[in-house]
Length: 309
Image (cartoon, rainbow, N blue to C red; front, side, top):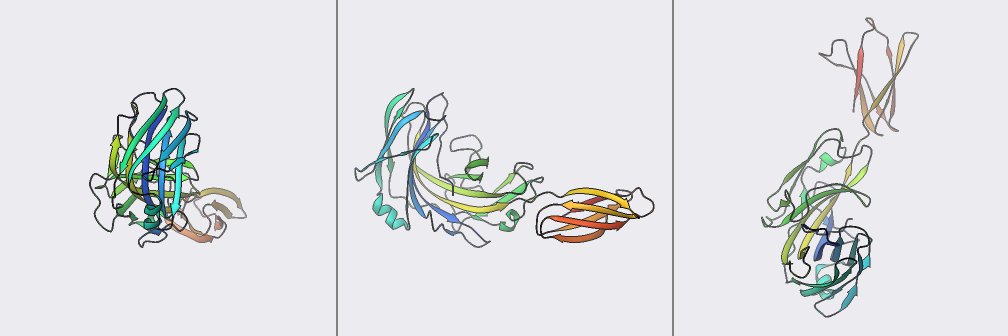
């Protein structure tokens, strides 16, 4: 699970990149079927102050519509209030609709207070990855195309972001809110370039849609405040280890060819004499990722091999 932090476009060298109040729903998709609410991080409120560098804010708070003052946690490059409920009604009971006021003390810029109006707004529809099988064994050396849809049409003005994380580290992301090339509610597909993802990894793919309902561009001169609602679907993405081949021998007329790749994958050894046509020589399922092929050293000896999974 990754935080849904909206970081609006900023143009000057300021301490704060943006601030926001968001209500939303985290979901998990574990099959081609529709995603379901995350049992640990179901319905949340996230108030945040996003920094342009580490430790540029010394204090941050949010005041709720019920006039409760909440102190945000210092997470080095942003401050956040993150609270979870098991239903939307429970979340709305604890954190009502209305005006949220964020205050922060910036190291270089000074102290600021920004009001964000979050009126009663339905959450946008939940994204569902439609080519779920495509992310189960991704070849990182090739482009990866993602396709998704919704149970009902979102607004064209909704902000959509697709991002991939490895633990807390960002691996890939489409542009942030307000940035050139940012996706909106009409987007249904995206291609991730080849060699973006590391091989042999289990990553978290997130498709997130946010409905911005109000902004504040005057309280802090260098960045905008945003209030909205969101839904975020997380899917495990697994990349394969590309096969590596080593030829040992020949010994006594036999070539020993070792292939290392992803565990539990089928390795196919192919051979050619002319690079025009390839023929299958042997097939092996490698429970631990290592296959060993023993093949006759045929005549002529000028023969080439390759392996496929």
